Image (cartoon, rainbow, N blue to C red; front, side, top):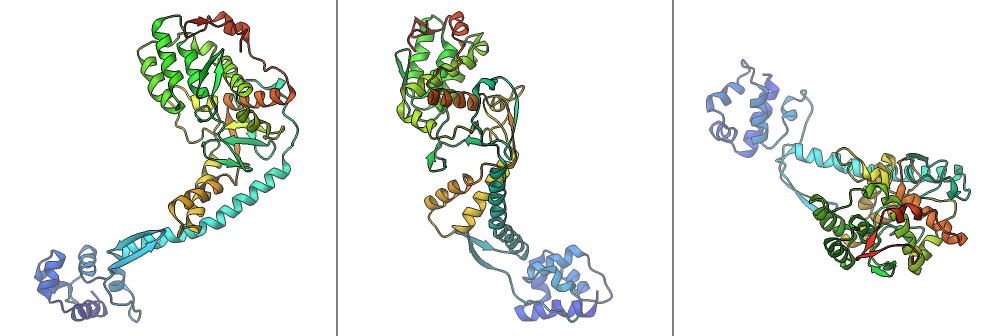
Length: 385
């Protein structure tokens, strides 16, 4: 070991009033080992030097630095307040990590601005022509390039888009309507009722349970899953569920003025997209990419925008930070390419245009009639929509 390195260790020991014996105890080493470290004839292991440096409150790099270079002799022990959180610092490595995290965070506003600029560029190249619903195939896998097609995506019920509350999903509350004279509190529960539409007392019981539920998400996770797992759902459900969904959503559109007005505000050239990027694919099937679409670029952009909003509003209340994050993630919608079937988005797009044009959507009523669908024990003829 070089003499200047030994001198640095001795200077640290003198500055902190630490003897060889005490240093050995702090390091978990023998006093003989400490004496050998301080002998220029011996070459100590890097592990022992690291233990000594930590015991003396410095980074091991200080001991190894070339002669003539200097580093403050101080024990790293304190607190840092960042992003509304107070963090206790116990080591140089911890401080170094936090500094790197801060550098990353400080770079996110610049990245966010770049994403917003790209979004604006893509909007200028889009072909804003009214959607021709006669060309929509409810079962076809699609790719929507956001630099060419204007898309109106929705995900969270509290999201806003162009000053419109973007709660278009089946799970969203606040839009009650009737299906063949029977009131439902949300479209998800009305949709699931078709899954248990046999002419049995148990089916009626399940449908009544769904009818009372005002939480579509809980109905799907609890009610549907419970009865589906014990084999009470219809075996032919997947042969008519898409047109049943179209029928249910059309009932919602025509009977709930608030929801209809929301659809009317969406531009006629917009393809509505259910953003299912954040949902995990199930084993053997990806229903999220059937009813919705995935767009990894949007997901990455959302995370960057939310991080930037949190950094820029670090001193605000948690409520205001969440509001800023919501505004940030909705500021970019035209990035990357959507991939999936987008059945739910297509159904909403069809219903929006049929509402605007005063025409009926292409619901296959013959298919639905052939399936003998019962609602609360009554066979549906679809004469009363």
